[in-house]
Image (cartoon, rainbow, N blue to C red; front, side, top):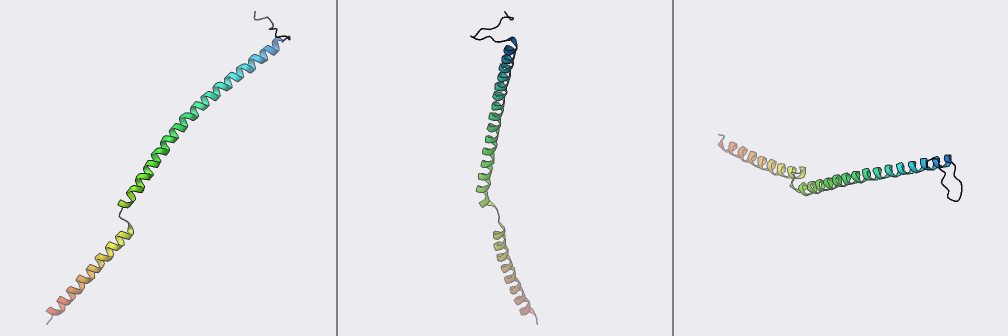
Amino acid sequence: MADEVVDTGAKISRFEQHVQIGLQALIVMLVGWLAFTTNQLQIEVARLTAEQANATAEITLLRGSAGDRYSSSQAREDFTEVRASIKELDARIDALERQQRP
């Protein structure tokens, strides 16, 4: 049976049959490779989607906590008040020292 020639209305030689089988095998391998590659891409897309969601959540968290930070402008305001208070105390001490001098 393996030596028989398939009759489809035209005579096909054994060489042509081997070429057809080779091409069919190549097509099956390509379809298998395509399925494997598609599956791998799907896994990578799922992983990257999860990473993107995590990054978005962290950015949102950081933006929300930005108001909780002690900023440099707040520090400047606080130090300005402290310096003014120190100057006021220095002036009072100087005044007391002048009063106590004979």
